Length: 211
Image 1 (cartoon, rainbow, N blue to C red):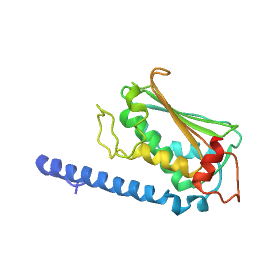
Image 2: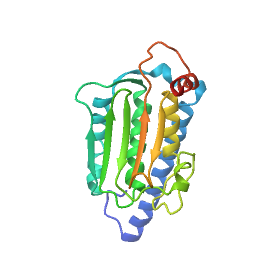
Image 3: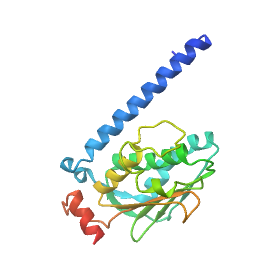
Image 4: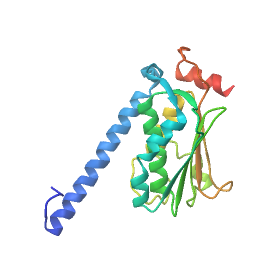
């Protein structure tokens, strides 16, 4: 409908309907993914060997056009050689997408988003140069449906909750750094070493990794 010539008042109403529909579709998709990373679902059954460097390079490139449309420079820093992890490609794509989308939506004044891959142990970090997150919100932004006071753009409040659950499903550790340590926000996901065939559930993986 929106692809056709429309009177301004009808176009405005059609756009509102589309926006609401898009939000509902995204919310439904996020809730389904939350169900998928439930402990009983055993997402590790879908794990494959992934090169974190090449995977981040490929998936991050999908966001270049959107970043440019917002006048944000999307940068990647990763080793040229492989950095191997075990993971579910679908869940990890959602994790990375939510982290980038979160920075684009909520990093006020951001001009740059950096995706940084390091090794020993394998680590993925997303850092922006925006206005940051106040200290009182830093421990709550990973809670489902939580939205920081003053958030400008609409959203379900599930993005970072999904990041947390997907990290847990991979036996990974994560943290957020902002004020006063840095100007913007840096979220880091640190993956455990390769454990192919270990058949550990996500709680066992997390507990062993944190020891």
